[in-house]
Length: 102
Image 1 (cartoon, rainbow, N blue to C red):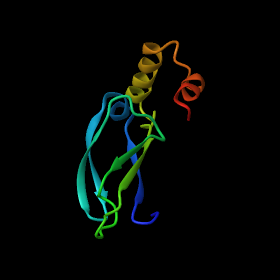
Image 2: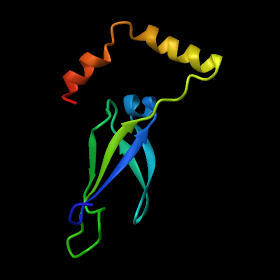
Image 3: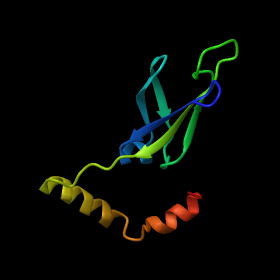
Image 4: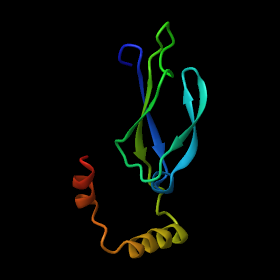
C-alpha cells in the first residue's frame, strides 16, 4: 500500500488476457467483479478509483495484471499448446515485449 492506495496482483489465464474477461477479485473491502479489457498484457495496471483504503478521501485499488500459463502435463494440453504455436507462426514474444514497452 502507498498512502491510501492499494496495489494487488491479478493473475489471468492467457485467454482472459487476450479476449477480455469479467473476473472476481478478492479485495480487503470484499469481492469485486472487474472487467479486464481484451488485449491486456502482463504488467498492465487497472485502476479502480475509490476502492483502496477507506477514509474521507478513499484511496484507489491498482490491479497489476499477470498471466499464468496452464501446464502442458497431458497429451491434450500439449496438443493445445502446439496448436496455439501453429496458429501464430510469426509471433516472437521478445519482439512483442519491446513493442509493449515492457
